[in-house]
Length: 382
Image 1 (tube, rainbow, N blue to C red):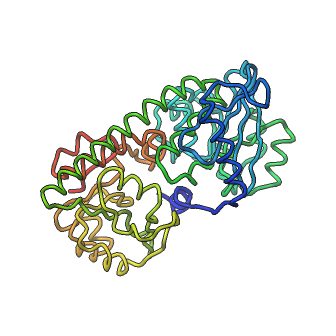
Image 2 (image 1 turned 90 degrees about the vertical axis):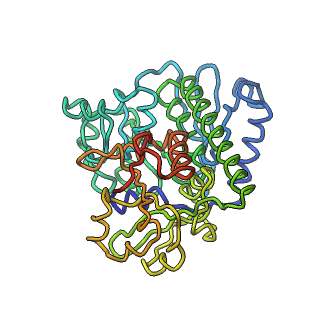
Image 3 (image 1 turned 135 degrees about the vertical axis):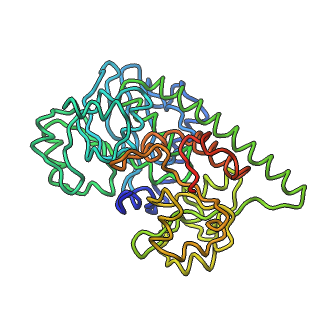
C-alpha cells in the first residue's frame, strides 16, 4: 500500500464543538422520530443514521438531501431527485468504489483514479472495455478527460482533494462534488454506514439500509461472542491475546492510535491492543526500537504491510525476528484478496464489510493455529 493511501485511511482532524453539537442535536431528533416522521420542515424527515458522526440524510417524497460536517462546518449539501436513476460517477478512492460494488452499481462508475489500486473483477473488466477510464489522482487530475466523460458526480475526500480551481471548473460544468470523509470515523460500523450515502446517490437507499442492517447485526453478534470468550478466559485466570499492528514503511512504523479504526476492530474482536494508551485517533510515527520496547512480547501481529512470507520480513530487517509473534509464527496479514498490481479488497469492499473483518479477527484471536483458509481477508504468514 502506498504511504498516501495508508495515511488517507488513518488521518483525523478535530472538529469544532459547535458543529458537533449541531450534529448531535440533529440526529437526536432523528433517533426520536426514527426514520419516517414529519418535523418542523414540513414534508421532510431525517433518515436514521445510527453510527456515523459525519453525515446525515433528509428525505422528502421527491428528493434526498445530504448533510455533512466538513472543515468545521455543518453543510446542508446536495439534493438528489429520487426519480433520477443511474448517475454517471467518478471516484477517487477504492473505498468509494467498494460501496457501489456492495450495491451492485459498478456500471455507474465511468472514471477512477488509478486502476492498479482496484480489485473488483467487474470494475476491472469495465476498464478493459473502456467503459470506465482512469482520470488521474487528486493532484494530477486530467480535467479534459473528466469533462469528456460527462459525469454527474465526482466523489472524493475533503482532505486530499485540494485542487480548488479544478473543483470550481467541474462544478461550473454541472458536475457535483461530494466529499466522502468516512476515514474520519473511528468505529468500523460508522465507516460502513456511509453505504447509505452511496445508496442515496445511486438511487438504492432502501437496499443500502437493508445491507447495512445485516452488516451491523453480524458485527454486533461477533462482538458479543468476543465478549463471551473474554469472560471465559477471565474465569480461567487467562488474559486476552495482546496484538501488534502494522510494520515499517521506509524508516518509520506508523502506529494507529488507541481510539483508531484498527484499535476498535482489535478491541471488538477480543484482543488487547499494545498501543491502546495512545488515546487519540491519530497515527503515530515510531521507530522499530520504540515498537520493540512496547510490543516485543505481543502474542499476535496483524496488518503487516506488503509482506507475504516471514523470510521476506527478515530480508528487509532482521530485527523483525526479535518479536515474540514472529518467533511463534503468529503473523496475519490482510492481503488474502490482493491482486498482482496491488489492488486489495480489504481496502475496497472490505471497508463496507467490517462484519467479515471482525469475524476473521475473532477467529484469529480465539484460535490463531486454525486453518487460515477460512478467513475472508487474512492469510497467515509462513
